[in-house]
Length: 449
Image: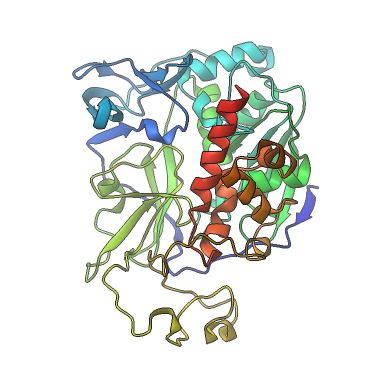
């Protein structure tokens, strides 16, 4: 029986538009893209040119600083373009699918006979390694490291996130193969965080159940409650959605970037689970299932707290397990703004009478900031939704001041920007909290290296 940890602080944002538990095939996408910005800290070195023929698993780019870390094509076809922006920054590598979905054959794997180096080499050659991140710094793991432990989060507690116990049906073999592969990479433990009664049976790892509101599903919260990261230690992390892709490699010898995601939100006609391929065009995912626009809409690759704003001409991002569509809200002009009383408005601080309806009420929340940024860090606001044994208010101040000693003492090595998403949501000063933490981690990494 899995150990149970109860998360007492946090916040579930009750949004309209939860996906119905049925799966439909996405419209076939003609174009797929690899987007370097999905992989924070990577300096892309392009390995293909326009017109090159590729298969799923063929390398498209690598990291200039660690050339063994490769990023591969999600489908077979022809490289359509390498699009660049200012100062020749690589924006995306676009592949035109040939609809054959042929994959590079990496051979048969027998995990029982493979050591850590062999597993690591397979992950690097196949382009699966970038799905593994590390703490500290929340970047792609360094393949030269041996992690103290590896943490897998097998549920997502973010608003409108997919139910992993539903998505994993039929993928149990791949998930177990992924666990077996990870166990080769650490001398410590592989921990898997699940919801109570998740119904996922795994061996070769330690299963820990988490009960509570978001961010209980964040791997950072799970690490903090199981075995916190201290200075000088390195742990690796990944989502079980990504672990399934790794498991497919070791069970079939080929890469398969197929993923079941949720198409959810108040602007979706029929919220549902969609079977697609990472890197597919957003238009193929949302086709025919978006409400007729009487106002502007925001499409997000990911969840409303940490996802990336995209358009229908963009592509599904590498780590996304959902696409969310909500009203933009830029055409709203409310009389007295936030001061207008209303029972249809969500409020953490009970500013509106809607809290009297209880936790069962769902809200149609748009993307407005509802205020302007102020240079004030409000005392006590973050603590109500931040469940880690860290003082978020003081950590944020130390990051802004870049006081390394205080940052270390206050737990900077344990956190990632996503852990502060709720702090940003409840912040009345409208500070870009996640970006502040990201900048602090980058500056600290540069200083330490």
